Image 1 (tube, helix red, strand yellow):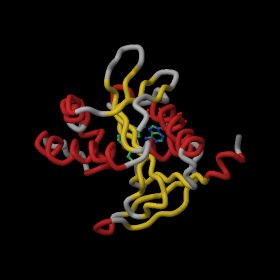
Image 2 (cartoon, rainbow, N blue to C red):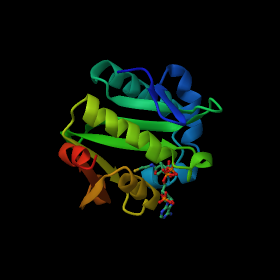
Image 3 (cartoon, protein in one colour):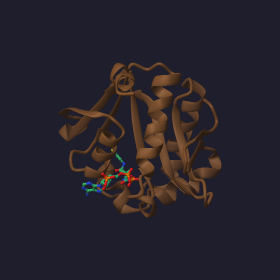
Image 4 (cartoon, rainbow, N blue to C red):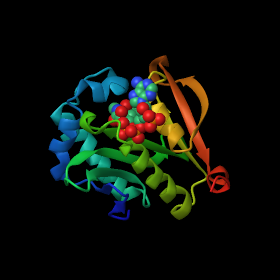
Length: 178
Ligand SMILES: CC(C)(COP(=O)(O)OP(=O)(O)OC[C@H]1O[C@@H](n2cnc3c(N)ncnc32)[C@H](O)[C@@H]1OP(=O)(O)O)[C@@H](O)C(=O)NCCC(=O)NCCS
């Protein structure tokens, strides 16, 4: 995976084990985890034992995909993360995702980082389709998907029958829209 990606206001870099506190802090805000797990913080032990090893595994196994820590260029602060990785339900699709600290919401950061990963996916990695999945009530996330060029595909029950929405952008539409 290329180490850095640059957007006008963000540096996207690889995670290191020194980012445990950043992840604990990010997931300690119930508003951040509201549409992920109903607003529960992620325990530090879980981040150390499960999340961080999975992130490191991405870097080993995936070719230039995975998860990027997002750093605000002006302050050097960790603001959250973006991922671009095979969709677990359908590895032919590449899934875009993002999670940012509340302090940074509403400033276009999620859209900015997403556009950079979408560009990488289509222009560098030659992926055929990029998808994103959200809780139907997560209006901010759905709006980011739209602003990044994805379109609503379907609503379907995921694990335990809770509904999710899926958005997608195909490579031909990405290039067709340029
Ligand atoms: C989803 C998330 C990443 C968005 O980040 P962000 O940097 O605020 O996103 P942007 O500023 O690029 O765009 C947000 C858009 O959603 C809109 N929005 C925000 N809250 C909204 C709401 N409750 N209803 C409708 N639109 C909303 C904003 O107005 C903006 O659209 P606009 O530019 O047309 O005005 C951020 O809210 C977050 O991290 N949430 C917690 C984690 C999460 O839910 N991740 C996604 C899981 S699928």
